[in-house]
Length: 124
Image (cartoon, rainbow, N blue to C red; front, side, top):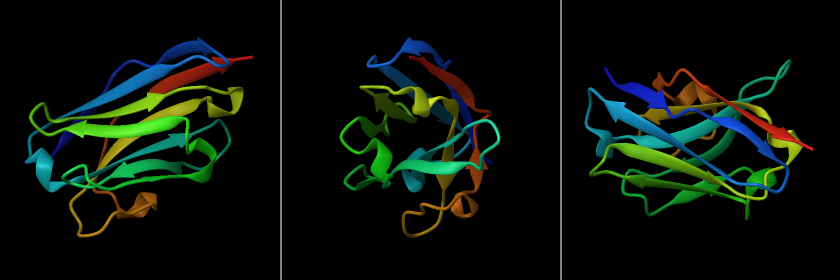
């Protein structure tokens, strides 16, 4: 069983930056592909970014490409989401997730463990 704990999000002005972290415990972190998802009020939870076990491969949804960067530190059992040039439409609860499967998933159903979520609010 893997436990995932996201860092506190926050309120940031449009154009600003924020880095989220997600610390894992209770499992072998390097054996999981990791992902970030977000859920805005009234919307479904959607894929944001994912990273392979080694960190060699990353994937992003089109709306965050060039602005967000996912990374991981397997020695610290932590995955990060660096968010730059934030927009009001990035406002959501952000969740990290762990996937013990083979390939990287961009669907939420492919992930086995989830964090509790952290609120990110971008003001215009």
